[in-house]
Image 1: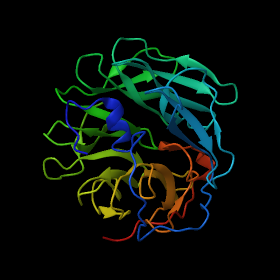
Image 2: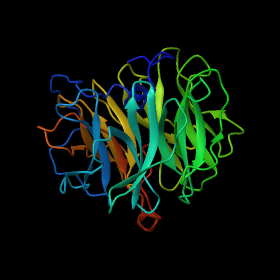
Image 3: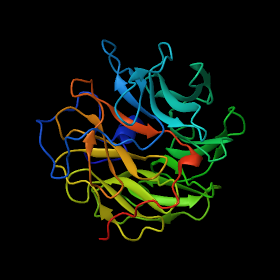
Image 4: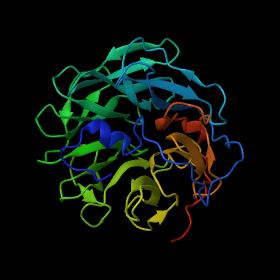
Amino acid sequence: MILGPRIPLAVLLAAAALPGCSRSPEPSPRSSAQAPVDGGGRIAFVQPRVGVPMATRILMIAPDGSELAPLDLGNLSASAPAFSPDGGALAFQVRERPAESDIYTADIARDEPSRVTTDPGEHTTPDWSPNGRKIAYTSTVTGDSEIWAVNADGSDPVQLTHNRSIDVGPDWSPDGRRIVFTSGRDDNFEIYVMRADGSHSVRLTHNSRGVPDQTPAWSPDGRHIAWSSAATGDLEIWVMDADGSDKVQLTHSRGVDSGPSWSPDGRRIAFSSDRSGDVQLWTMSADGSNSAQLTPADSPPSFAPAWSSDPRAISQDMPHPPSP
């Protein structure tokens, strides 16, 4: 899928891994039949609501594939989950009506959603700051798709980017000083990083026009960024150093691998893939090995994984990605 300025933000979020997207099953050279390896925490993800067109719901699953259950958010069409730093709450986007969506939060134990954004437009792809005080997100309130930040209670929204193009999908660095995101400002969708106040934006990827990079995610120790790229023709998961150097392809599947999310110990990466047919959740080691399907084969399409954060679980001896 080639991304362009006319593609809705919800499509940018899920890349080509959308409900209803399916392929003939195809083995991957890195696929494994073994049970998923636990990386700690929990994984939230998105499925279409059965019998409700264009509506989605958020579910939770343990990293070993057990404890699969939906999050009770009533009739909200919820997607794009992001865990709070302590893992006790979720931020997510809710589709209110066509071209209208808002950011909500919910305490996981109580399942009580609270609306964060209230302005007209699309407010999508939330991500918590490491101290839990702010939420970065994408908004079209100015007419362009820009990155904003708001206090977690919805007060004091601040526009961080100012470009007549699409800026989307912010992800906060673990130290809170930087935000990585996707932008089409240079006539192609590439990965950029900026300071948390929106200044000093730096481009990290440089592909040919029409070859998109998207869905960046910081590793828990802040040393690496995983993202999705169509540099080889298919959408695959890659990893690079936080300064944009040492880019390494992790998946090698003819199809769509998208939306990487790191385990709290940095040893595993969850992602969505259609390599087995319908889009499902998979996990792999941080070097691209030991991939395993997480959601059951008969599940509805499952995508947009978000692995819960737990600062106590971050290893001081995390494996490094393979050398190029």
